[in-house]
Length: 524
Image 1 (cartoon, rainbow, N blue to C red):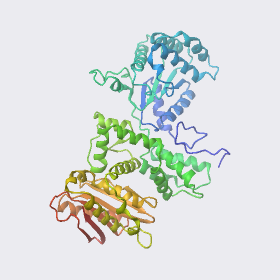
Image 2: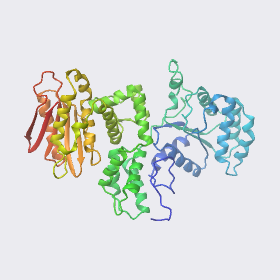
Image 3: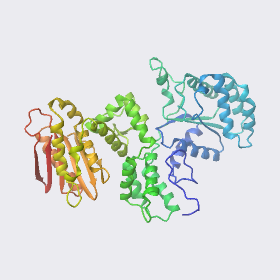
Image 4: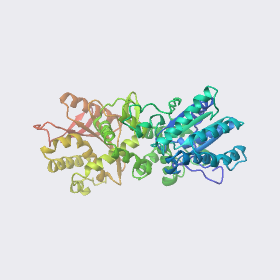
């Protein structure tokens, strides 16, 4: 440790360098700075807990170094009443500007204080902004965080319209106003009229269509994660292979800032390795993280619960292997991206990261699990070997019996859609506490779903697949055998969901040998 005040990994709110281990975001800040230098107005719309507030803070400090004067305010916590009239909003806005610099001796502080009680409308506010910008010795940049807290309000759009009009007049040399304005929030303010008057044919005519395009990816790349780990290493005597750990963190999180920081915090403060970090520590942290009831996960589940179309498309992507084109003009895809659930991968919409994917599996499986009582089928005494390892063959046979006894032919449509989720739900109480499961590979065109179960020190590879003909079945076995080889496993398991009403395979099982691999199969 370099100093007496130990830093920490921060997973809530603003990150500051002297208190928290920081990723090096200098390249992103530099690209944002270029937009400001050109006098651009732009928005940073990204999901919650994605580091927007921290980036605004870092940008503010850099702008001040470059000679700009920055007003940084937030609409969070100011209440809805402020947005009920111009008479309330206009002085409140000036008061927020004043409070942001009141601790300094800046002459702008006195200027604002003298005008707060004199503004009663947007026209008054516009004139004060003009005088403020004209009297300032530096170019003024306005940063507004949490800008969409009260954005489902027509008055807020009128405020944006005022800023837009002043921006255009400044370009024409007819007014003076903020040199650059940066709005940060979850939603893109260019489309906020969608939330106010969805029936309006002119809903895309936004008062913020002056905004420059800001497409910067705010997720952490591996080098940025590595820089945060380097910061940790510099403050502690613990050994960390920063490059290897950063790569694994990115593999599971796709660079989601909250998830990266949360995993690191769990390792550092809960697991507490005394000498070094390794990949096993990440796996342990993942198990603990997926059991948490944190606000990030709550928000994800709440979003799915409240948006049935989004729930359905996520289900089809993760459980059916359906290919959904990544097109932000599709309102459902756009909604998934806005809330950080979906992202683009080669033109396909996929779940943003493996942790969210696992969380969604668990959440959807738990909903399906309530449809039948599984208790008597997962009695552990019959599912364990003498050495304490899991008898996966017996687990599959029990699942086969469960479906036969609890479901009939009339449930065929339900099983066709939810069979694989039922298996995941069946598996949960068996491995709970001593193991975990996760989806390891992409669903292929054969509609396979490969599950890796870790129980104690043992690993089990299970493929869940719908019956789609003998040729597809043969390819699936070959792929499973290849996957077993890559995972250094000799035994694999295959669950085949057979929807043919008169199939003589349902209820059967067999063990085959393929390319020196043993594969146990059941038909359900």
